[in-house]
Length: 361
Image (tube, rainbow, N blue to C red; front, side, top):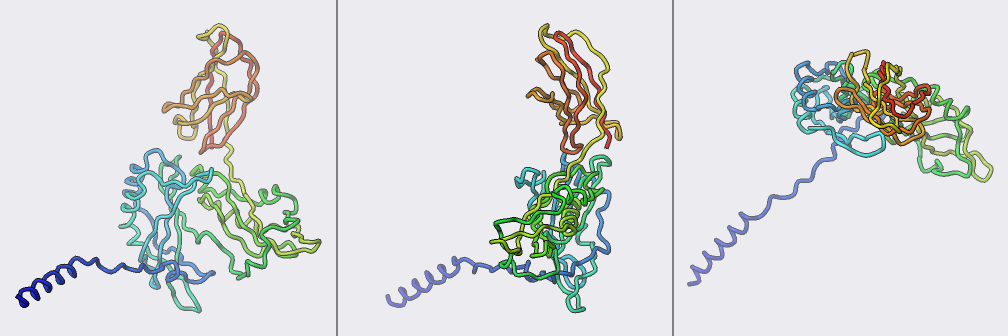
């Protein structure tokens, strides 16, 4: 009986061991392993996307344009890519989002990334592991995919003690010449312009007691080279230094830099006819991109000073009804083209006015 009981206990013990879960794996901190140095980054030597893969990505994207993906590459000492990580995209209003079919796009990219070759980062003359980011950007005018490689979202070789810099001072630093002086130094990257990328880049600047910018970091970027252009403009700016209790002090301040496209928009009133209502006016028309000779979809046409407006459909057409008689300016706005206001037009009751709006970038 004891022998049988021993075998039964042994069997139950073996079964319980077999059902035990595998030990939890501790994932390595790849951000530390591939840290490299603050002033050394891998440089692309052979990195491109084939035409066939570009077309596959375009099909997956649907109508999405601009920056459609941001990825971090973990590059080894020989210049090959060990790992890739998908990063979060941010809209102009600050909301996080993911491009359509983002996971499928990354799977499509992997065979291409495996072929890429980089000049590795160096530390004390020796090649080291490092990180590098790239953006996937869809250019609407040529319906193509472009790669934009960039350093990680902070730069500056100077090592500083951030605790020494006031987050808020009684008198905050002010750019000499105002924000307009910084904006005047900003060069809008051609890639971002062609991709319709616009919005605000927020740059944190570390400003010393003499008003010099010692270091900058990107707090929120929009990509397409705009982040780097914003940093460069802030770094070249001289500030009136901040003060605390009457003494100049080191301060960290966030500077917003605006990137906004201004389209060349022309409004043509080509005719008028009887409207559908005797006591109100109407507008109908179409918006055309003259560079590509294609309709502008999802553009907004509105009457300045009112809540009246309409979005263009898939053929670029729009209709605005129930307009009180009077003189109005027309506003055109679009995420990829920017905005423009027309001269004043007089709209009479019982009339429908026909417009052609031509947009050139």
